[in-house]
Structures are given as C-alpha cells and as structure tokens.
Image 1 (cartoon, rainbow, N blue to C red):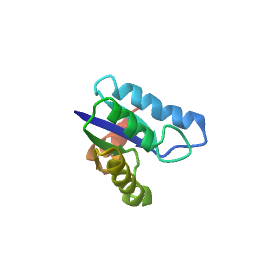
Image 2 (image 1 turned 90 degrees about the vertical axis):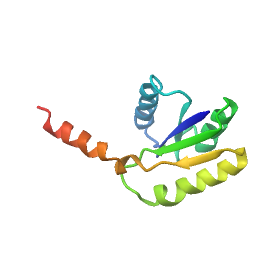
Image 3 (image 1 turned 180 degrees about the vertical axis):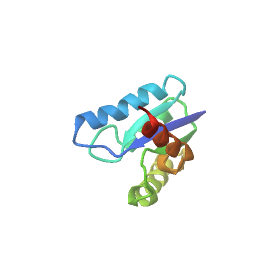
Amino acid sequence: MQGYILLSHGSKVKESNDASAKVLEEVRKTIKNVQLAFLELAEPDFGSAVKALKESGVTHINVLPLFLAPGKHVREDVPHLCETFGKQYEIEIIQLQHIGANSGYIKLIENILEQK
C-alpha cells in the first residue's frame, strides 16, 4: 500500500506551520495515507510521519518536498532522512522532485499574476 509525506521546512511561526497543515487537509480529501512532516522547528518530524504510515500498513512511501528550489535540504537532508528512516522502519522511501521542479508550478504563478 502506498503512502505519502508532504515535507515542509517548518517554522517558529505558528501560522506558517498551520498553512502547511491546511494543505494536508485539502490533499487528504482525495489522497489516502498522506502525512505532513516538518524538516525542523515544528512537529511532526519526518520520523514520526514514517512511523505513522508504517503502523497504518503502508509498504512504500513517496516524499514530496514542499520546497521551491533544490537547495541543501532537498539535495542532502531529505535523501539522508529517506535512507535513515527507510532502514529503521524497513520500508521503501522515495524522494520525489521538489515542488518547484514541477512545470505546473510555473503555470500556477502565471495564473496568480494574471488575476485581476
């Protein structure tokens, strides 16, 4: 069974973390077995999200980094987390391309800019 993690950076600012939680709520309307995790500064952390999915019977996890650019977190930290927790929980964890690499992201920006 497939599971998903939406991976956000995390913030000391509650409203920022709440915005990520709202994204999760919307995604859960159409996608099952999806969890939110924060890289730092907020909970739940990545390990907690993996554990929750594993306990729910998920056998494979795709991680979507909610990052606009392929910085250090996307290139180094996320792959390390996937490898570490994949081994710990004996589950396959695949990192998807960060959200900014998706061509739909550009269309979204264009749509927002063209609104009156």
